[in-house]
Length: 324
Image (cartoon, rainbow, N blue to C red; front, side):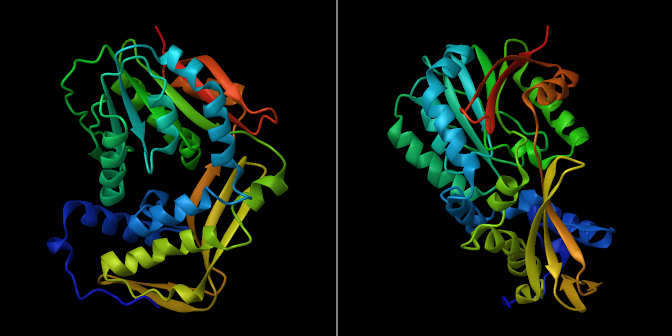
């Protein structure tokens, strides 16, 4: 069991930590219990996710990278000259480098991520690798409104790059709102380049979230560890197991941590009793067809202009523009 922090009162917490606390308490108080997946990505969680992206079973990153390597010049031609490229959930910015290598005269690159240390380390590396491009990191939760930085050079338009099929973590109504917010952020002349995981056989999907090395399990359980470290939790992470399964009816992989015994867990000053076998849902990962995602995006004011897939059509990168 991870060591708990000294007693901390909510009023003493920094705003971001206070929001984390409120989201955790709210999620654990509901039935079924939930925890927001956006809190996976503390420093340790970000490192673990980078490891997941290297796994044989986790085809998503490898397949998306292959698509980007093959079609990045075409994508950048679609995005156009003088853009401020804003990347949501930038992480290590591996895929964005393929765009930065081919973008025609960009005004600036704005990586947006919730993990501050990881973000600034990656941004420093990118600034050294691309000294001719202004890199302006923003530590923010991109699911909420945030302010774009002002670049030294005025951008002709804004484009959001949203890789990794992260949009699949949102239920359809929330995904629609997210896409509408992106359309508003980009404004006239702007666009969105987004990675979307496609529907496929169940065995491939479930293997991707249940790797043989247990890295995804460690990543999932790290969320409980983060609660201990940052929110004065006393959760025995050894008493939970990772679970991931595909829901065919709803077209999504569902991740949970499952209590292995009757137990009481404490977060700050709040306690919760869990029964053996009770789940805490930590993530959804919705899978789409290209046409189905285009219909969802159209409801948010975005029109599909181009899309690119791998030969097996396991994954797609779509370029959408603001509808007239």
